[in-house]
Every structure is written in C-alpha cells, then in structure tokens.
Image (cartoon, rainbow, N blue to C red; front, side):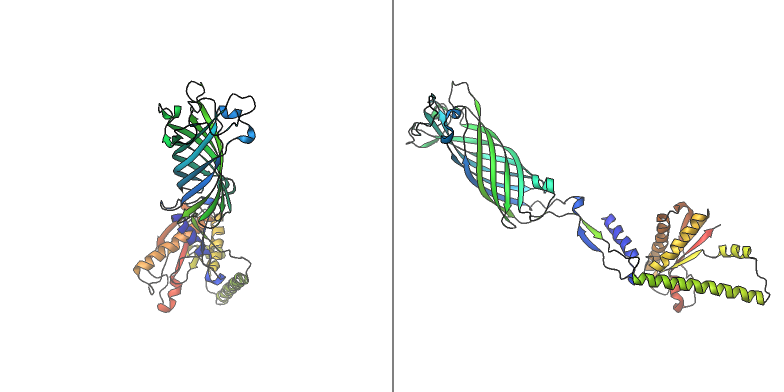
Length: 425
C-alpha cells in the first residue's frame, strides 16, 4: 500500500495545473498475479450423466461391436481457490456391465445373452451397480497456458482424484430378483462388497452465461476389484473409460481481481502550454541579465567603490545559490521551478561544496501544524529531486526555519513559500 501511495504522490508532483494535469487513474494489473477471494466466493455445483464401458479381464473376449455401454452419473460441489486450482467432492452412480465365465463373479447374469467372440469360453454376463463418494483436484489448463480472462467461453480443466464405492447386485442370475449389497459369489461370502478407484480426466467447460456452464467430461477410472470371482487368479484393476454431459452452476462471485495500481497520465513536454512557460522563463532571465548590466553601469558612473569581479563572485556565494518557490499550501515542485532545480544540480556537479537546504513557509496563512509539515515536505522534496539527478545526499544538509523568509507584511507572503539553497562553508 505504501508503494502505491508514493507512486501517486510522484505523479502529483509532476502534473502541475499549468500543464492541464489529469487525475491519477487506478486500474487492475494482472501482471502482479491475482488476489485470493473470500471463502464464500467461487463455489459451484455440477451434475453429470453419461455412459461408460467396463474393460475387465474377461471383457477383452467380447466382440468389439457388442461391448456394453452402461449408465453413470455424478453430482459434485466444489470451489476454485485461484484461477488455476480447485477441488470438488460428491457422489457417483455407475452400472457395470461385462462378461465372465465364473458363476462366482460379481453380479453374474444369465439373461444378458451371448456377447462373446466366436470360440471364446465365456458365456455369462455381469451386471452390478457401484454407489459411492469421490473427490478430485482441478487444474485449469486454459488459464495456465493463456492467462486468466474473465468471461472466457471455453476452459479445459484437468483433474485427478480417488473414490470409494459400495457394490449392489441382483440376487438371481436371471435378473428377476432384488438388488442387494454384496461382492463376488453374489454376496454369499460378502467379499469385495466395497472397492476403491483412481480417476483422471479432462473437463471441457463451455460458458452459457455468467453463472451457468455446459460440461463435457471425458473420464478414465481404474477400479480395484476381483471382478471375475474367486480362484481365477486375476485380481485386476478394471479400466473404465466414460463420457458425460452436464451442467455447472457457479454461486456468488465468479471472477478474480488483480492488485490495483495507479496509472499516471502522460505529460507532453512539447505541449503549447509548456513551451509558453519556457518562453516566459527565458524572457525573465534576459530581463535579469539586463538589470545586472544596468546596475554595473550605474555603479561605474558614480565612481562608487565596486568590488572586482572576483570579489563579486565571492560575495554572491554568500547569498543563496537558488530559491525555489511554491504555490500556497503545496509542496510539489512546479515545472517552472524544476528548471531552477535542474540548473542547480548542474552547478553542484561541477563543484565539491556541501550545501544547506532550508524549508520555509509563510506565517500569514495556515497554522503551525500545516506550516511545519510544509517546510519539511518542501525541503525533503528538493533534496530527493537533487539525489535523483545524481547529487550525493551526503553533500545536502536539510533544515527548516519557522520564521518568514522575507517579512514585508501579508502582501509579501508568496515570497516566504520557498526552499533556499546555500553553500555550507
């Protein structure tokens, strides 16, 4: 927050009213990353439905065109913690259809017909249901590759997770019985009545609105199960690919915010206003030189003792090297006064002297609290500007004076709003 404040102050110092200054604008900067939202933001619910294909040890002997497609569905609730990472948990239902030659296999069914390859010694079907809970970690691949963009139509989300399920089977091989909870041997021994699975997939999300997405979920499960019954020697992991369509509803805030930074308006150095100010400064400098010449001529005519030029130079060193004036109540250096600071910095670069910088504020306006702050801000601002221009800060001593730089009454107050620069002897 301090950096933002300093940057805004720097903008204000260089944008004087005489140069048609504009207000500093504050915008989000995605280059600095994104801010984590509140805990109640970025929640969603997803519902999916589709079909899957069981690919157990015996299923490989089925005719490819007669592989069983079985229904499955998921219901999730989840949250995105950043534009890249999220989680979801929920429940799932899967009906597993396959083939076996073992009457002790899970969900043996004699009413499913001959679906095997010619000559294969597999004539029995399998059909059982899995109901359980599942959880996934989500990674937004699109935001990672292309950068986060609010309202993007398509997002590709990779995910991986695990699940546990409870198996239900029909207690009669011809399918005329009732569904019961159990495992192989049609539940008589209760083995493998629960199993685990690992899953991964690609969730394709298409935005239908700010809060609603269409989902195409391409999923691959590895289900742990002794699917073909006891004594077969094939305790396998069932490959179970599936495809599902669904909808997602996003609650509350759905976007992410980047840190806010100030943007300073550009000032054109070649603007007509700045050129006019430079012309006025040049004219003022010419008048000053003319007055100096007239003064020298007058002194010569009156035969007054005039110190040699080298003594005049020495005397001039005792006076302030420069005086920088400020508008009432302001501590920024105006473009006109910046010309003086630039000239002073060039003189300092050619010398090895140390300097005293004194901050002034007239005592006819404001109050003590305001004037004390103005004196400190003005003198420290000049020192910082000289340091930025290459002057060693060790050569610059700062102080403030609570009196008036000049005291000719309230009408002379503008002459007291200044910073003086003197050589430190």
